[in-house]
Length: 114
Length: 111
Image 1 (cartoon, each protein chain N blue to C red):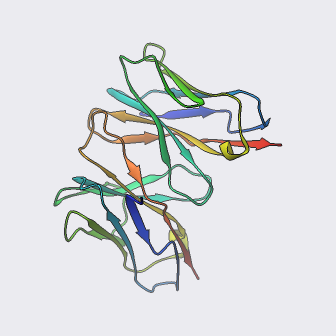
Image 2 (image 1 turned 135 degrees about the vertical axis):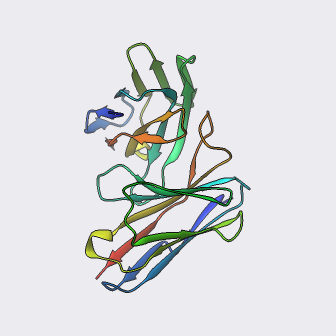
């Protein structure tokens, strides 16, 4: 059974055209994360929510925004995608921050920017 | 600087053979170390997670070791299968909950 679901799996957008990626979870976890992973690179944390508390990484561009309307859903909004934003976007969840808690990743959304 | 370094960068082995992947880290303070398997085009899947007091943790044919004194970990894969072909990522968690990812080792298992 899918626990962390990401939609769509593949997204094509045009340069500068806003795009929204979706993540949902059935684990009832408090923490949800968004990562950006470029080819052959490690995932890079963009931001995370601890419940409704939003935590932005210092080097995340303003072009990236996030919304978490409820426990189950979290969205990644890219306001004006550039060619450099083409990447795999991974959503992950964990029950709590820190400690021994495992992060469960979704299958990812691969974003192509034309 | 908090860093996680993995070696080798890539590895090719024959089906049925064993292999060992290495991970060195400089993350401080240290909370835990995780190994993830990431198939091409998929999200990472957790294999093992260890705290500083654990020396070894197994998950089927995967066995992870941790030496918190030398800040080294290894992932040993026994009797490799074609489905083991993937990237293996070492991830270290600090006490703040932030994860530091290694660049991964790409393993290719050939028949």
